[in-house]
Amino acid sequence: MAAVIQPFQPGQEAQVLDLILPIQQLEFGVPITAADQPDLARIPDVYQAGRGGFWVGLEQGRVVGTIGLIDFGQAPGGGGALRKMFLRKDQRGCGLAQALLDVLLDHAAIHQLPGLWLGTLPHMGAAHRFYERNGFRRVKPGDLPPDFPRMPVDTVFYALEPLRAPAR
Image 1 (cartoon, rainbow, N blue to C red):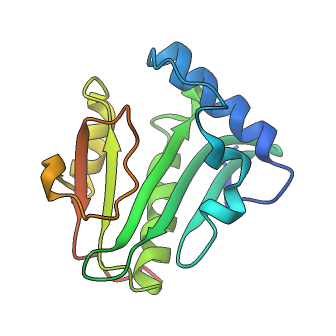
Image 2 (tube, one colour):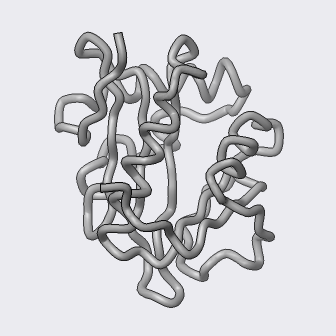
């Protein structure tokens, strides 16, 4: 069964945490807790404000994937920060990651964000290749927009500018 993508709804917070925390802690060895990520307790305020968004992939009513977009700053120094792209292990390689990213890219283009930026970890090679296949280019920390909401653990950064036209 293919996952269905929809905007995050209040009440899905626990499922989002149940997906993200084990991936961060166990799969990638990042010593991070829910308390270190207060944005996940405030998804509507942090992600779904302005031109941002947060989407979940659902399979049989359970969250199996996530992707978030934070609207930050104003052009030319602003744009969108891609955050919280996580998929349950059995959902990787089946097209859900691409579908989630396409929803986010269409939303960003429709809302005329000038570009997208993201931070990740050096050992996440599959994620790096995925972003590069989708037109993101690696940038130095000094090339990030001044208002980019940087996460302390991130040391590898990507940018996508200008955005492509929406697929719709």
